[in-house]
Length: 282
Figure 1 (cartoon, rainbow, N blue to C red):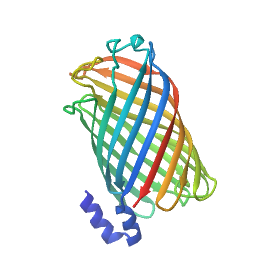
Figure 2 (figure 1 turned 45 degrees about the vertical axis):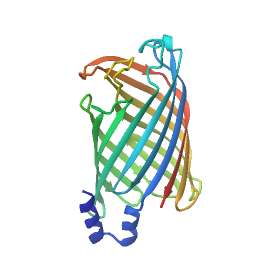
Figure 3 (figure 1 turned 90 degrees about the vertical axis):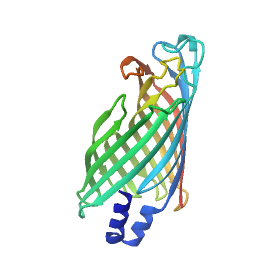
Figure 4 (figure 1 turned 120 degrees about the horizontal axis):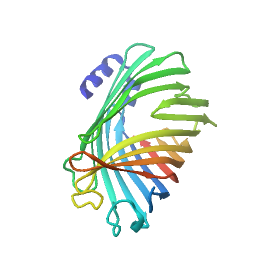
């Protein structure tokens, strides 16, 4: 798919656009959510750090989570004596296929593979598909519709993608993206500084360790509903800084045994945090 896209670009695209498609970009992201109470007792603080290298054709990334538990003896899971989970890891790779059909219609598909786990990587692999068609009404108004799916042998999630964007590529004044799984409203105070407010939904399946006190060789499906308020600032043509205040509306943790049977559901109550991201384009 990368080859076919490159050949298409060589034949159809202007050179400056092709250069932008293949130029690499590295992103470092760090976030923290604290004082989150677990429904039923206890609590947890979560820190998340990730690194991503990508361009418009595809990318790879690694993410690390660390958990700091409170009142372990009151938690509705685990052995009541030790941390249920100390850290988790995730590796992900994706390929993008973009096809501009004409001046008003644009098609994009993204195929990904991932491994998300506590310790052991066997039976931790999954995949994803994200595809949509975009219709450009005029220079300001664009509509997108399609679907995305996260596949895992334990749990597969498929949802529609529908959105409307207003001046999403502009660098002056108001811009809006309204839809699912992402929504935000932003305003450019100038060409370099964008202030924004938005929300995002995410889902993943994590393979627990062979000796997990929650469920040995089991799985956790995590669903996050997050809102944010912050800014993006272009320090230069190559360097961009993002900072946001986070508010976790709710986090769902569905627990499965090693056979894929759901055995419990837990809720982590709303909490606040921060997110920091820096991106450099080579």
